[in-house]
Length: 164
Figure 1 (cartoon, rainbow, N blue to C red):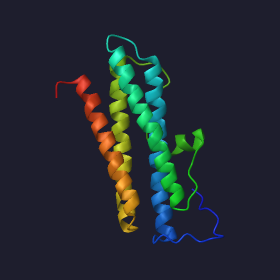
Figure 2: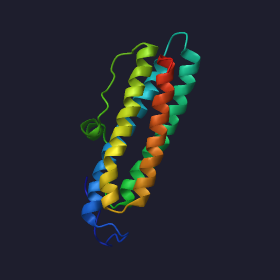
Figure 3: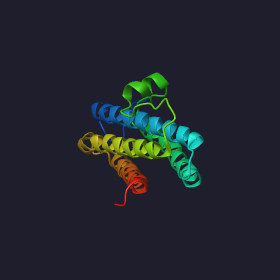
């Protein structure tokens, strides 16, 4: 992603190279989060079957949380002095979450959302080394929060599918 104008240099204690590396990782996290948001919202609209009431409500809570997370992640990228990505094509290039074009069964929706939340957790975890090298506590805190959400969500969704 492109670094913002240098008319007033950013001086937050993280050098430009580190900020760019962290922002690149956060851009992937933003793309994954937005892709998971779209998938979760899509499933919310289209879920059917005996689990409809509970899944419809659960998916709404999840996509609402993801919508707020997208803003938090994008604003962190901006705080690092880098422009945040925002186009569908850029998100498609950066995201590790595949698009779902059909309308799967309710059980398959849950399985796909488990995989999506685990993918976001892996992306968040992959950014830690750059944030640690840059001594970027704000990003580290945000990553820990995101991991907590995605790992818990994956567990809750997986519990619907198994007796574990």
